[in-house]
Image (cartoon, rainbow, N blue to C red):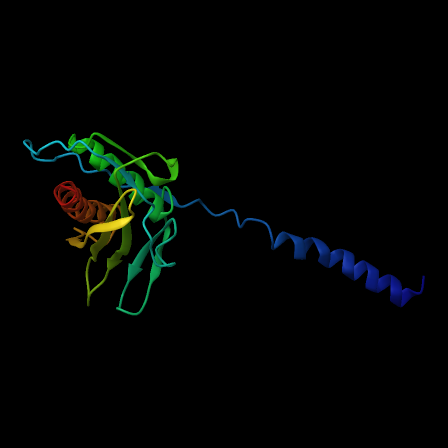
Length: 203
């Protein structure tokens, strides 16, 4: 082999490990995981319904269909908190929390996820329109949650009712745990209204 060719081969071999190593994980700490809680403090005395309900996975914008915690500093921008994530994609987490909230109300005969393909009287089709921390001019943000929902009658698949539920809660400080607490408060307010409305609208 000619000396020049040998030098080129040795150079290629020397560069190969460096090129491959760029595809490996950087070794940084994994993000800290957060979740919300279902609504559990429903007022007593609500009437129990005799029909069964399925809850669909909420439709959402692509920016919210993620495990990452979204934040917004203007009406036209979406960003994410570093080193923090939900325990699941936001729509799937919200679906599970809505199902658990209905269960905790103790007012519905049977409830499940739409993906289980069970027979039911109604399907609740939510839409997650806002699920983000919103920053103003300074200080801690507010958590903004907006759920829009359609109640679909089966087997006709006609829309029996539809409504939007909007809630916001101020974080006590500009730290992720406090911001997650604000998400929890806003989610509870919107979901409590969603459950009460669904149980009344289907009657």
